Length: 315
Length: 205
Image 1 (cartoon, each protein chain N blue to C red):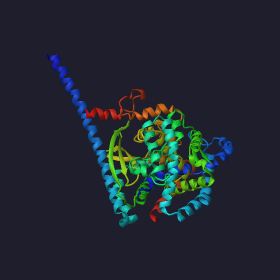
Image 2: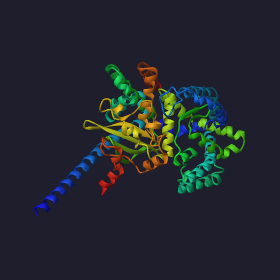
Image 3: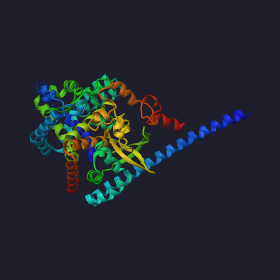
Image 4: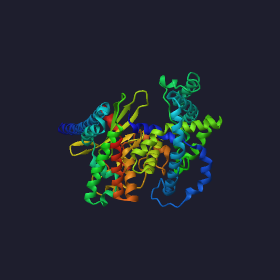
């Protein structure tokens, strides 16, 4: 149905597209120090990033997409699903590791159960039998763990072949790559994994083509917001500062509220701004800090939360 | 005795004041929720009849639904941020018009079929600046549910949607970044041309 929903689901798949370029990227890392001509704080290398984005887009058009299309054309649907399930199951090893690192022991137990069930009853992960008994797949990775540990998000970078990432995401990607068994079983399996990731991302990429007025900005914003959504386990979505600050009732209110149109969602929308301590911000988000007192009071004086108000009303 | 009575009277007044505040808040929440409920019902209805209606049928039906539930004028103003004040009035008017068309066209294009989806209400919250966020869940058969949070603000007596946050991705923030970036990099005419191109593409698919 809703293609936007599919876009949200599939978006992160592209992020997995080409870790093979990682060492290449490190070699090109010097490019990331090009002069800062963009006003954007989260994306200071926008000019460089736009060039790499354009390069990646061409590689995708001429190499990745034709291969993924051919794969989809020759592979029966049930086999495609089986392949996706197989690689997802391997990723669960990393999910369990990060559950533990984030002290989510209960979720870790469920994910371990999911891994064991799919590996045995699900024939090495080809069938997602755990889903049928209510063990949904969780999405955890090392970048989210770093966010929980309080590591700032850092700046947004588009890496050749790899695509969008933040500076916090780089060690995250290294850890995730090392913790994924697929990277120890040989090049052919790794190649199929990449093709599978690209094939799964088809809907998301098509959505960007259809909906985006500026595909680069669209990709950056949705990437940063999606990563924040994951890092906060979806608990901070509509309590974002951006939503609370946007008010155009009075002329010039943008200036008054300090919104800079060139800042990105990662900053203005995120409860985890790169300049603050993420674990502290996450705690605030988890406490459902939607303030309801008049906006003219200083932040420190706004004590009651939306949740508290509802609780009070119930009493 | 008189002092006790006065204190009791003052306490009653305070309680009444608190109750009336809570009552007003409940009323506002209820009105805001009704707007979202109605819009979601109409959206599901359009999806169910999506193929029969075709693009233009869906567009016509959704034009009324979207206009009655969203504050498109305010959204158009927010998405260009401080650039709005720099635009002459005819350009502001033109932007509002094409933006409204694009919003409806986008719904008509993306919500074209139905496979058993339902929306359920989760909870609601008040925001700092007098807005209300209605949290809902889109249930999709054989798939993970998706969080849809609607932020509404009051426009006169009516509550209107000004933002939709789907699984953490804010439509308003996304559009604001895109629109301001295009305005700054390429100018007003390029923005209008890009919006018209999208509307045109949606109508062809």
